[in-house]
Image (cartoon, rainbow, N blue to C red):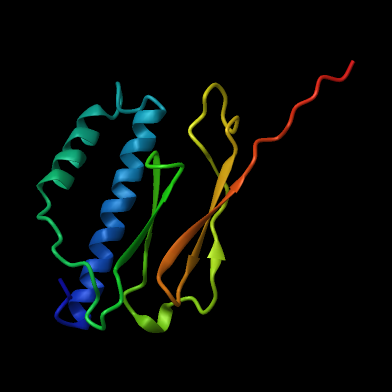
Length: 140
């Protein structure tokens, strides 16, 4: 569904940034054990507020550009999403790469290599470049 106007575009962008940042924050709290003791009640309230948000029916800004682009990495194991700016004047002019992200490990972080996602603001798509894990040799 296409957004009806620029004001709605800005609202959609702000809401999606808030949800993404909030989801990241809750994951970080959980990963570091903060939601176990000291922060469990605020984290639960925050999670409940995110769940209570109405679904966003829009997939495109008012000018027809996609709001988000998604690329799957490592089969269906990982997914990266980019939120495009609501104002077309703020679109990047050239493609860029994100920092390498370790693929889900078998044993240790990075043991399966890394993925680098490249986003193109002309086609609004992402592509993936894989970096092989470093070869370790035993030196005696």
